[in-house]
Length: 103
Image 1 (cartoon, rainbow, N blue to C red):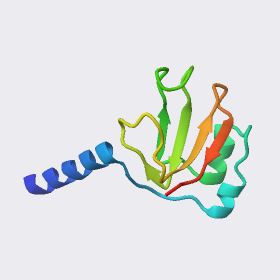
Image 2: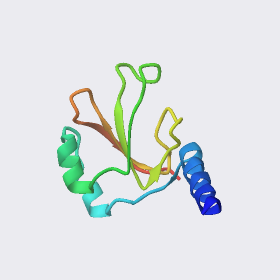
Image 3: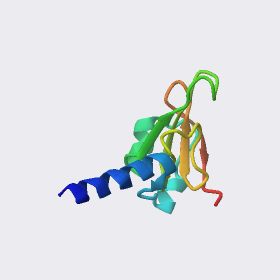
């Protein structure tokens, strides 16, 4: 049992430190995400984001929420991973922009 617990802990630590693959998005649903949509509308289209983050004020003025689909960046990453589908939200909780994977 100890060995199994250690293996699980190591896998979790690796995912937190290095990022990991998550549930992806359906292409047709992704195409329907638009600037100005609410978080609730995005969630209705894409489902709950496997990774939800907020930048700190040091990285973006006033902070910014982003949701990653398909790949979750490290918990220490100041920005989303370039392997992710990303939805960025403004301070009102509306889509400010979207980004597709670049690698």
